[in-house]
Length: 151
Image (cartoon, rainbow, N blue to C red):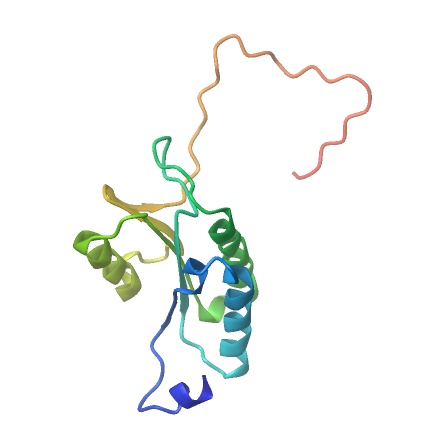
């Protein structure tokens, strides 16, 4: 890593494909985050996965291991925000449109988004949506001792 960093000019960003090798996806990604910090690299790190998140009912999850990289990435975003770029989940099959969307995300086209999924139908960011209450659902009627935490 030190040899690569001694090149002409500063590093503008790091794109990691380590999660695509599921044998050591989480460990290798954690080592990369630490190594970039040890080397003083302040460039944003983007970690790419494939099939780690779902954007809808028809979009199945493919890799629990790569989903773990998303968990690690969320922690890295909190611990080293100055050098965190984000997480991008790619579809199982890539095409030119997918790569063009990825280039747009890495070039800053996603603005403040740091957790994205690229699919054939577009680029998706995390959002909270109100769940529809099912008809006839029972109300909550606790009995005994109940501990409610949070605010």
